[in-house]
Amino acid sequence: MKIKLISDSTCDLSQEILDKYNICIAPLVINIEGREYMDRIDISNDDFYKNLMNYTSHPTTSMPSPKSYIACIDKAIEQGYDEVLCICMSSGTSGSYQGALLAKELYYEQNPGSKIRFEIIDSVSMSHGSGWLVMKCAMLMEQGYNLNMLIEYCESIKYKIKHLLSVDDLDNLIRSGRLSNTSGIIGKLLNVHPIMSMKNTKGAVVAKKRGLKHVYNYYIQEFVKHADLEQTNFVIIGYTSDINKAENLKSMLINIASYHGEIYIMQMGVAVGTHVGLGGLSMFFVEKPHEDFIHHFIKISR
Image (cartoon, rainbow, N blue to C red; front, side):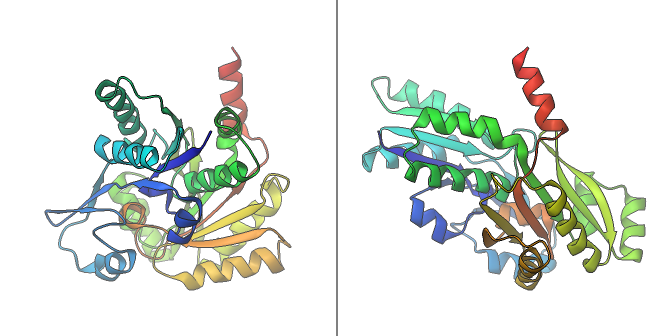
């Protein structure tokens, strides 16, 4: 059976990776000053970050339409695929997963005789976190994994994908309610960089570091302390507008953390960048079992 991978555009995988593994993307919709853009189609990352500070109102995002997912299913059928695996951004932070579920229902209503199998995974991840899961599944397919094996793998590891995301623009976190106005003002004065991770399927501030040097050090310390090196055969480092930050972090992973696996540097796309802002820096790897992971398996075993 041939398996087609689908994701929404917040997976932020590079075009090179999407092309290599023939991954179909359902784009989020970006609203900029009253005009709608399809992520990765109607607007480029570079144009967005170049003009972000000049927009008179802050851009907003909305989930992919069911039609976008159905278009990926139709494309899979045209290409001769028998099965489709869709991996979506965390249902705790976006409607992308619900949109995919709706698309599945609509597709089978419109095509009652279709024999294609369409399965959907809630990645409980954001940005390159879900991208890491999509990319890993593509690699496992090359090793002969079937659809059931991929689903089992995703469910067994998705709570262990570690997210680290720091931002320069505190206004985005204030606007989203992640920081109070008072904390944001103090943070700006002290050059504080909030660092976010995932907790219970949602983004949460887990640390605040003064100055970029301390951000780098925190990332490296977290990797050395928590990385499951048997599972982390590659790391993804993400950035919004400053690739030099990503390159510096990569060098530190190699030279200080002595990591010898593959390290991919990929830019965060427009949908994610709308909420992260300029200067964002992220890192994704598989960590050892932790509270969220253990809580999840206690819950499903009852």
